[in-house]
Amino acid sequence: MLNIALPKGRLGDKVYKLLMALGYPCRELEDEGCRKLIFENEESGVRYFLVKPSDVAIYVEKGAADIGVVGKDILLESEAQVYELLDLGFGRCRMAVAAKKDFRDDTDRPLRVATKFPHIARTYYDGLGRETEMIKLYGSIELAPLVGMADVIVDIVETGTTLRENGLEVVSEIVPISARLIANPAAYVFKGEEIRRICDELKKEISK
Ligand code: PRP
Image 1 (cartoon, rainbow, N blue to C red):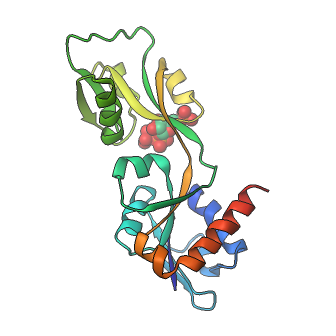
Image 2 (image 1 turned 135 degrees about the vertical axis):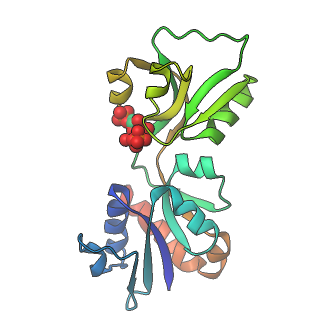
Image 3 (image 1 turned 90 degrees about the vertical axis):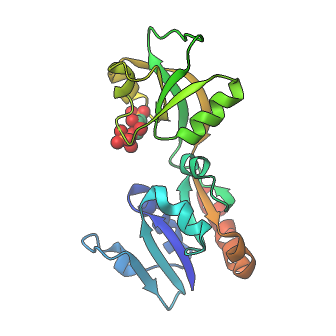
């Protein structure tokens, strides 16, 4: 059995369609009303786990899943010990620093950074030698500078609409983000042939 951690939501739907085309269908998974979390197709030798997108890397790191698909943002933030096999090229966005339009950095005090990604933000600012105070939030990050709680945010920017509609702008870009195929290192040894085949087929599929 090949165990696959599939992120719930749009990304997972897209990945499932690709895997289905490669010979890993699981009809039950296509039933939208179903609340099950494990889906198995013995015939094609696959078992899917439906997990929260931010948990995919941990399932793969721990070996509960052999492979998975996860955003590069989550991979960087979690520092999971997994193999990154392929950039799937979708779910593209960027990790960026943003602030109010009139923002001026006062280097006499630590920079207050609101973010869902404190590890990425800290690594970025450590690289610049800038002292920071991290404010970990779980959503609506753009609100923090508007209410004076933070100087800047480090967050995902996709279309830029959320920033624009809240009077914020990108100050600097940290890293481009997209969906990645990842594998558990031990599974990559024991189920290597199958995993490499999936990786090669996915590469062909996305370059069409
Ligand atoms: C993400 C991100 C930004 C927004 C960026 O938030 O944190 O807020 O999307 O997208 P845009 O550039 O296309 O506007 P999400 O929708 O996940 O909601 P959240 O605020 O609950 O994190």
